Amino acid sequence: MNTSQSSLCLNQFSWEEWDNQMIAVLYRCDRRFVVQRYIERVLANSSQWQRLAKSSFPSIEPIGRTYKMMEHEVKLMHKIFSWHLNGTLSFSIIGELDQLLDWEDLLDFIERAQIASKNNKRNQSKTINSPSIVPTIPVGTSVLTKKIVEKNPIADNLQAKKNDLAPIKMNKKVLQPQRSFDENTLSSSSNNWIQINNICIPYINKSQQSRLLPYQVLVDCDLLNEKEQSFLFHFTTKASSVDIENFERIISTSSSIDFTLDSDLMLIDLYHLIFGMSKVLYVKLLNNQRDVNKSYKTVLAQRGGTALVHSRSVPFITVGKRDCMLLESLSTILQPTTKNMSSLRRHSLLARSHEIDYLRLVEFYQRTYQQDDSKNLNQQQQLLVNIDKIQKYVDENDIIIDMSLAQYQQIEFQRLKNQIEINQNEIQRNAKQTQL
Image (tube, rainbow, N blue to C red; front, side, top):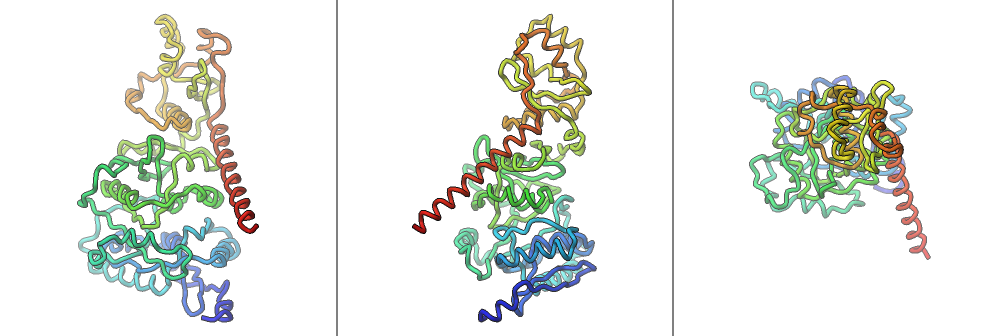
């Protein structure tokens, strides 16, 4: 293709229709392409697509290739969102994250899915997709041909040049519960699930205080707005083959959630996620997926933060006009007498479940990163005591309201923002020195 022909294709797109869904298709001269993450969201509105995803996707040959997006294609998609779609479908297209599918390859894939769906009506998959996750288009080596290239397909993909405009070959990550792994290399267990607002998502441990999440799943679940996506992408890291195996092991134990991870998986630390957002999130480590709190919005509606009690940080919650703490959290800090404890109990309130959950959330944000539910299994034993009542048994400056949870979240957000600015300034200085 010569330069004049290539320039004619810039910023060219057309509209295609499938099952009453209008799809923006980008042109590269005589070939048409579509952004994978964009079309997954559009087709998620199609009941036919949802049925095909559940019945056929796991059993048919995936799309063989993806293509890197060019800078002008990223800008074009943003213009389509703002001008042609009037902001009705708007999320950040990120060149390093998003990829293109050949339109003809996608149509062939849909045709295979429709044929498989008709043949498998009597024996449809029992897998239930999470309602928070849009169906992912399988991309990579066919399950049928995977055994031929079994040597080390993941390592081969990781050696692909990032700036190469040729198609990127990707291997579909097939969940294999029966596959044996070296237990010494695994950093996670089968119950490594976390609830973030209304999303249930797996995580892996890299260290005692580091929990890594699949960034793409967070994006697909609409947890992040456009600014948050662009901001948090600075803190993502590339998953290793061992990381992906760990995730697969966790996912394979789930009876209700099914999604596919590819070899270009990006990870983000939980710390960067919760403090890189514009607001406080509901976060809860789950012993199992049945522990999901469907009333998380009630928890987020509470107000509170931390107070310093003898210079130690203790969560508090505002109940009406009173700032209250769990009486149990004071027993080891104040070491009150039996008489004082009896008096405080008489002035205490019975803590409700959403109030206990909020205090846990405050503690979690304080980077404790531990949730010991054994303390609060019997909620009848959990009592809230007014801070004003505690003041009677301590010196005047022994209890000080420190800051609200929202304030703490914003302080940590500013630290991350400053970190990005420092890194960018350093990159610019190094670039200038190289030019000299």
